[in-house]
Amino acid sequence: MEPAFTATELLSGSKYPTQGGLCLIIGGLRKHLERQLDPSVNTQWRVADAMKEKLDTYWPILCDTPSVLAALFDPRTKLSSFELDEQETSIATLEECYKLYMPTGETRIEEKPKSTFTLFKSLMRDNTTGQPRVSNEIESYLALNDENEDMEPLAWWQIHEDRYPTLARAARDYLGIQATSVPCEQTFSVAKNTISLVRNRIDGENARASLCLKSWYLDPDL
Image 1 (tube, rainbow, N blue to C red):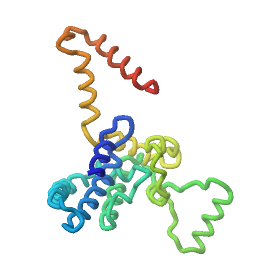
Image 2: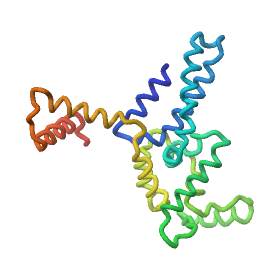
Image 3: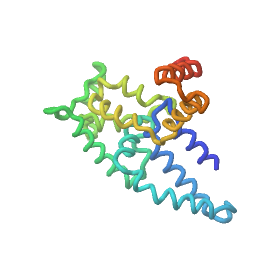
């Protein structure tokens, strides 16, 4: 049950983007449960089978556009969130999203070399290696190695916004989606403790000030 517990903790976070890791985490749980279906390995294989069946039921819904795009926009995972036979469809979904966010009249964006040597290295690759030239944002972004898992996705896009302006705009929208309703429920739970049965006449401004003060006290970085 440890992977399920870890998944719950990760997807219930409120101080970091969670939607980007949803496909990877649920996909990993499905693989883990699949390995537990052998009676010789796990005496509780029927429980694992029931859990996997439930995840399999929701997997097609999970692989809808918002979750797919959020996974691709997470620089720590990108295509590694999907099986090989799902990656082509995922890229097609990203391309459609790119068209929606692309400013009117924009065409394929040529990647600017970072240095003089980079320019000539790219020219040599085009002429000698036969590799396709990375000439737009999507190809360039997907060609990058996955970032360290400690990297904050939104901070990464802020740093690389000049290099991928169109993708950065879309990434902020999709990574801002929460994977679960837990953060919202926690907020209402805190409010319930402030506006209780014995303090039910507190006005809105005082309630707001109390909630903000408590948040700042518990987390000075806010």
